[in-house]
Image 1: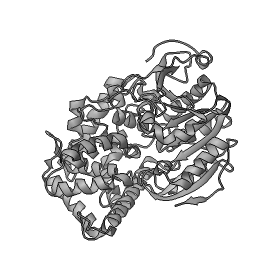
Image 2: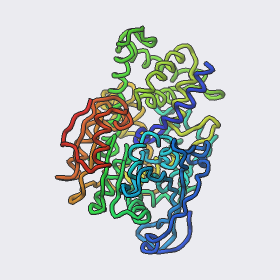
Image 3: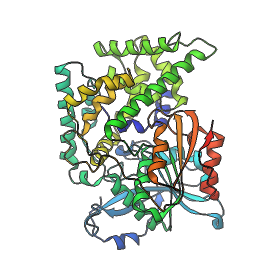
Image 4: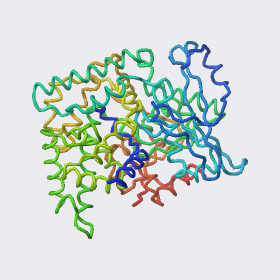
Length: 516
């Protein structure tokens, strides 16, 4: 069962590829100090195929203009409290600016979320979407420490993960609860056994310090930044630590920096319920009959019955695995990340009602970082490691049981799923840093903060709270009245004009601009 914050990231490109196929047929270790590392030279070369921890697959295809993606490794201190000690190699990727050299602003660094998502694989997957930004920036992303090719956190192997994700993550009785707790303890123990050295050094503050070193190594006076989902939390922490180094920055799909892990999980329960309500309303409002229900209430009632049936008796999924209640819930959540995936959710539900769980399982696999070859990226391991290193609160089963009514009230469908996942950090070997991140950044340059009213994973209210937390004169809020996780990739003209105006021309949009 992923950590609550795991639901912030979605491997939408991989999901689309897998579904199209299915539906067609139905360290480093060197020494050095911080000053030396800031002067290091990056050796850019053609990118290799992604590692298994990055998600596997082929090397990135050339850009539309024929330019190649370039990759390099940057060394950073393993322990920022001991900058002259061991180093860690961080994987970077870039596409050089396509416009005239005298118009180049610098590098635009992306973090796409997770935490635990590989920027080295995600940036080229969505690179064409940022072609206009590339006219004045080198587009740059990276695998944060503990992620992908950057000394990845390793826990269970692929076969063990298949079993782990088949478990019942919404226990109904004492025996199921004991099994769930035991499985969580085994997962965490495996992380400690296989990745003990890196676990204390994957906090968001560590990644923020890495980004400031990256800024220097890339040759930029300021960090120009585009953070999405968890990337907004990372960006906020960076702004707090280095306010004078903030350049032009955009936060999209904004994490609420004022919430504890529990409050974040409860907020996501409400967010995913809202997205499910919107999906159901959309389905029944179409001209043709909605194949999964006659009314919005009927759609959601049938989904609830399906999950109860799967709890008693799973159905065939992707052979040899079965579609369980937990897998189906994860698959539904994955599809709610983007309105473009609602058609897959409709198809998956329709098939599941007929006893075929393949589509929902492909969606669930994407959420968990599993590819078609049965290999898992390390996104789940990294996600748990980063969240547990960041989040101070630790919860026990009795506490979760007391909170179940509140979570179920927030979402009959997702409440149990998100409540029980609060146990992810209960026996984690590294203490959490704080109740919530500090993003107060007085003196920083303006940061464009975009909230989406229909966002399931990072509910809209978080954008306003981020603006308040950044401090007066820093956060500039823009509201997008839309669906899905984030706003820029919706291709809404109003949103993209605001982002382009700021990042390309330095024009800060009016506060409280609304796009629809």
